[in-house]
Image (cartoon, rainbow, N blue to C red; front, side):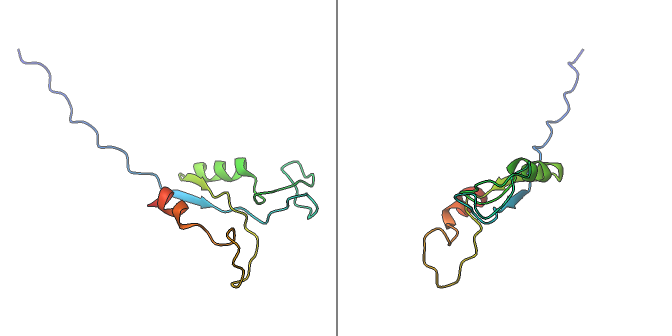
Length: 96
């Protein structure tokens, strides 16, 4: 008797789509009044975001969450500070 035939291997699952999650305005000392998840005014040095809720939402929708740790503060086009431009290496490293 010949051995039973093995089924062909399953193809790898398709890559998951990524959800880019951007942070809100920063508040280094907690004076702007952005609340935390308990409603208490809190400092948000790298930008206001309820990380747990945002990443959970992305996962529930079938996405891989990618949180950028860059504050979402409003800047003008003339602002030349290094933190107001989104660094391209982040996109190359995570999405390239």
